[in-house]
Length: 301
Image (cartoon, rainbow, N blue to C red; front, side, top):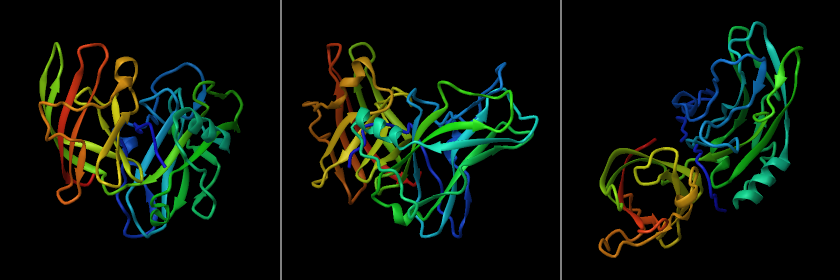
């Protein structure tokens, strides 16, 4: 199965537990998932699961473990600030949202069965004095390895009067993945051939994030976290590069583009040294922009 996104961007990690318990997602802390919205003058309740795209989609990658693990999966937020009372928000499962996302993005997410993932409760409480509550799910990460699972959710009701469900952010799709063997922190070095601002690349902590069982996402060159590529590792350890989250206009054409002056960057992965040699670019507008990068694994994300 192949994922053309994201990435989430969604960037996204949890440590394994030595025992069963509730995990706080690092991505919420890092601002990659927008669970807190400042200000506002209406009592609007929303499901802002992604800070980085308008599709309200995020992919969350969790560390492998044999333990039952409970995670905060979906943030439900009161836009106006802290709640003056406990607010109970009901979410409905919407499998059709997953199908629509698959059809639009060429992905193949399946809705989890109850034997794989358990929804703790579909009623989320935003506690008095807070502005965010979470829908939690429980699963054993080792049972999900290699699977591409996603839920579609929509806010259906709020138990108190005078609260409005957001029209734009009342629903979303959340994917659950287990980190693959390529996921981690890498040292990226290379060069960005650009007609007006050519530059060397030296990023000591480049995040490479699970997108599927055999693919990852990372930033496009040094353009920043808003633009990503998807790197798919093929059975022969060659790699295929396709557009990821944030690509639009000229960067939507990003893909394998070999710089013949740098033949060592041959779009391959070396499992012995955990090293990617990448050559890619986007040919519009002319002249071509080409990125050559060496990614060397340095540790877990």
